[in-house]
Image (cartoon, rainbow, N blue to C red; front, side):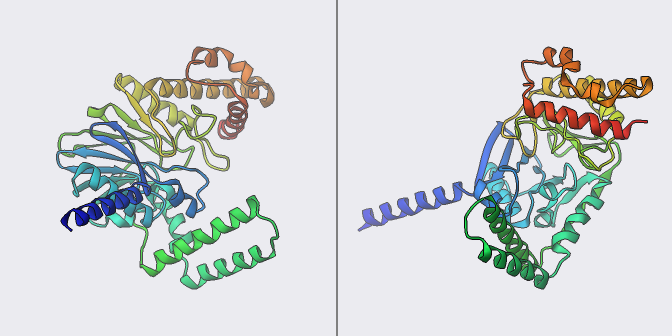
Length: 356
């Protein structure tokens, strides 16, 4: 009888572990740094267009530093639990948002006893998320669910359209649950303008503001003792075919001079960078990727300035072939496929709008 009970206990333990393991994906970067992402199923439930959102956890002698809190309280809970189990430590010292977009700050409220650190511009970005979802009412979200469900009833085939509508319904249901549970977006309570250094226990964490481009509050986070750089969503590192390109956005101010200033200063002061991690990347990159991105930004800025001064048409420098020397120099890390070419054309358009 005891043997049967023991086998039953072992079986239940294995089943519980396998179910739990599917909820998050953990990648070890160093002995004291890991990335944690909800399993793809959890991300799809939110209608998220990517298949990964990394939070980065750093183990210090004072406790855990967590970088980026996911796109929701539910996923933040998953990540928090996984980090506690992995490091056998339930103390969190700092929570850092690499910027205020929802995928990076949506779970802040789960860490209501901890200091949240971010750039001073992040509050406005977080407010947009607050207004869009948690600023709504349960009635509003239920109307959205009802409306989309009616649309589904009129669709006779299952395709990408029906998949998108189903994902939207799941997302609205998810935020409805957040409202019912009285979750509220939490704003940073420790902010900075250009640079800040945190010293939790035996780790040194350096924060640097990049300038506007992807958003308005993007920062670099460098864990000195682990030689690890966290870049948020500043660069497409491992998440798209264009793995090594900067993440510039249309209809947002681009302060490319600030980008160059910050990256140049960082590279001058940090010879040792073994790992570069992005929030939506599937694998770490290296310092050489940051060197390329900095040189690319300089080359694009200089080319746009020269073309405008000489009256050269924008289309001339949108041809990636005019940057052959740079791309050939870094051919070991950059692949000039069609996606990279399209992104380069877009980058020229964006920088052209932001340089006089």
